[in-house]
Length: 555
Image 1: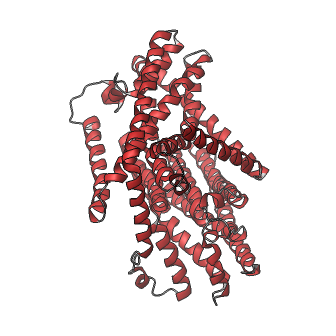
Image 2: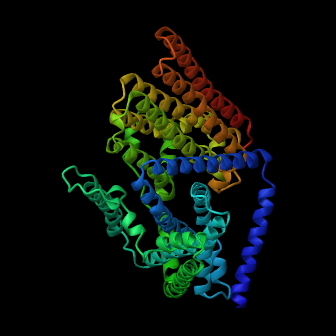
Image 3: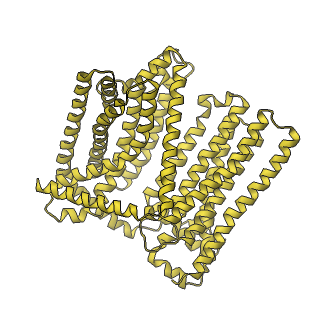
């Protein structure tokens, strides 16, 4: 018991230090994050509420879907929590800086793994809470449930969160211990996404194939509803238990809660046992692979030939950043997931028959797609481009003493960001326009807006990253969440709104026949000049300020 008490006391001291660090943050950052979080929650609440009203207008089928929607929602959240448990579980169990400290003290391996599992579940809980709160609030308001509905949801959500995160932790412990290495691992990593795509394609063919048997069932209409409502799935236990408690059936709801808690206890025992058997071997395996990686071969040796026309100093900086980026799967996987999901969505727009909608709706969807791509560009610019110069760390003095001018270093960072963001964003908008079958005027405007956002975000993130350079911090998250990182994100989002919203409103007025052709051409010309001016200022001015700031630094 003293072992558990010692770990809990250590976690308590860490929590207190976290609170002290939060109190030291700038008020601007705290206010911005608070307002953004509140706006996000209110937006999700209104979106869910509008969706419930839409389903209710469908009649009988909509009401049946509403009755099973709670189970489907928790099944989706459960899948997200399992994936989040895998990602956070690997980083907290095998890559945490405190693991060497814990293994050298009188803590049993099973207790260390169990403690790290709870820590991983806590990290995964914030995203779960951000989505559950507005959904439950909208669901309770729409169905006229009492305020106790929130209490029952909290009562069932905690063990559900622990259960899903525990499943992810078990998978991590097993995969790290017995996963293949070398060429077999690369083949496996390539085969899993292909198998997943083939599985999704087969499900889509079975569900939407025109030649299939026409049977109007909910399982055909909503894929995944059948497993979500199965009596042996945790999503059904949670949904049925919450609704039973809300309708006064305390006995049934209490029994389902006990079943959920019992399964959490079973998973916790499994984590302790598997951790005691596999953890030390797996941890040494991870540490050994990390040390071997220090002497890895040069990545992309052929890239130097492709950049033969670029000056040697610029080429060296660009190649270094590219190799560092692709050596860390945690970095390139985030960009791949963001842009991959957008590409998957855009390529399936005709599945939802969006191309058959009237022009007004297709134009609206096109501008919303510009918003989605631009938002991803802003987030990736803040996450990867802004901390580039700061992550040079204490070795930045090498650049300071070299004959390379700081302005050329800033230009190299900027050009690399443009090459990374501009082609992907414009290609996604071309794909969106082709799938929606919009006119060429809308397609070219969407591509131009995405390109301007990419240029502005690259200039802002590079320039402000040079102005607010922090060579002492080695943590990218700390650099991004600093005052400069927050300011960069605010300016990026502000530019996105100032560039896209005016064009969207203008085209909406045109389609609504509220503007004459002459007035539309005048306004369109004015907005084009506006876009060029703000893009130029937002791109060039931060780069100039950043280069001057670096030139004044004493390295």
